[in-house]
Image (cartoon, rainbow, N blue to C red):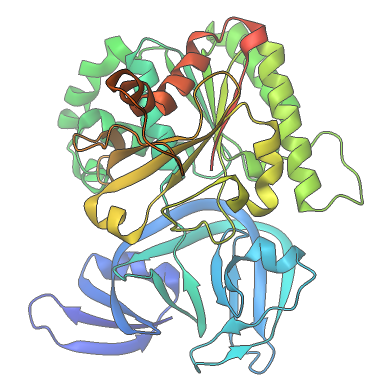
Length: 415
């Protein structure tokens, strides 16, 4: 990665090659810019994305240009933005745009290892930068942020929440939750004195005591049987029975029943079927998240056909909410939420919600447009507008309220 850094006092720029993992420490002392197809652009955030399965991409013309990354990482190809998962499983021939300005061929290899993955956020209209010569895209759209925010809201509604992370560590997940609860930027939590931390934490004890459990598993290390055993263990040892389960992320689970002929689509469809079966069995709604892996990334008009290989999730889920963020929405600090699928009520509606990245929170948008329908005329009266505005939230809340009725069990997917 080629970066420029400058002293915040002297403003003297220095050009150097650094590993992406070194960016975190550099950001604490310098302003840093990374090279992109449009010149140098500022790095605004360093993101630790947890442990993920690692792939290795090598430029065929220059073997020194090699990148190790997760399956969700995006590269710009001669056929548009593609995730590593797409590049690895596709039968088509792709070429990736390089810092030479040319699209070049490459080799991609599954290392079958799991490592810590980090990423950066750049201040760039197209969110792209060079990673060792490859044009890539930061993928931090906030799936974990949204689930953590919803989980906190559930606890404040006096619900028991189990948060299972197959991506972030328990400490990282807890940090996001505390930023929301303490109403303070996540970067400041580590600087709280012990007394100040306990003062804030003790005020929340009556609300959160025995109501929020976080459990971490390494990526691809568990299946739904492990979750079954966890639920039994929590009930036996802690007398804890969740009202809702957040699963971050479902794509990092293994299927119980496998076939050697399974491709990534079939494997993930099996996983989703097994998760939905678990939700039906225990009578608890399960919320998870998947990443768009086609042209829907960054689109303001996300729909079910933007799910690519993740269409297996959509076919099985009872409720699918598409969350996207165009450049304009990102600048305004908002997400667009579209209710793409709902077996139990109103469908094809959209709302906007505000996001506070520093405090890990999503909240109502005071400037909401009262929820216009997707690709159709707006609702004919005020009552319909109000129904539309809250449709996505009601769909999720309805699943939670009916969690004790097995006939209404739901798997809720965020696209």
